[in-house]
Length: 136
Image 1 (cartoon, rainbow, N blue to C red):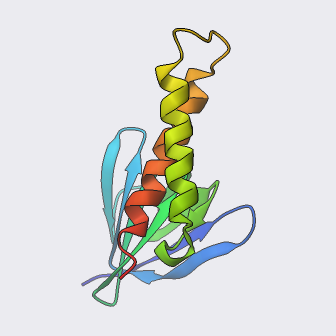
Image 2 (image 1 turned 180 degrees about the vertical axis):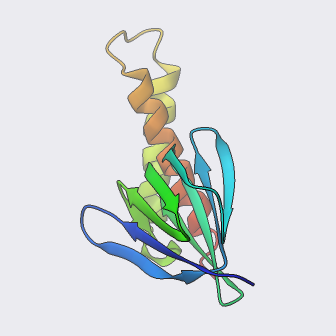
């Protein structure tokens, strides 16, 4: 299978650099799969799980949003944060999920709730929890 280069960069580090067969991730427009020779592509990312197929093996990580640019068989993902399943503190992610759900449930009584921020926090927590389930 044809391969392409992908680089995932966070503010702290280069999270992943390598030659891969495919990636699957969640964009502003839904789930997308990138294969070699994909058309040039730029879009925003929402919190979700990225699946990377490298040498026939799937790797999974949590992305908290960002952007992807793909052209000439090279992709770069600029992510706010990225974590491998074994790096995720599941208890902390579950607590963040509960806090976000509570804020969203109380939005009618508390007009100071930033709904978009609470929704983002909920999506990020759910992505972390989902990615952690791949930690075998």
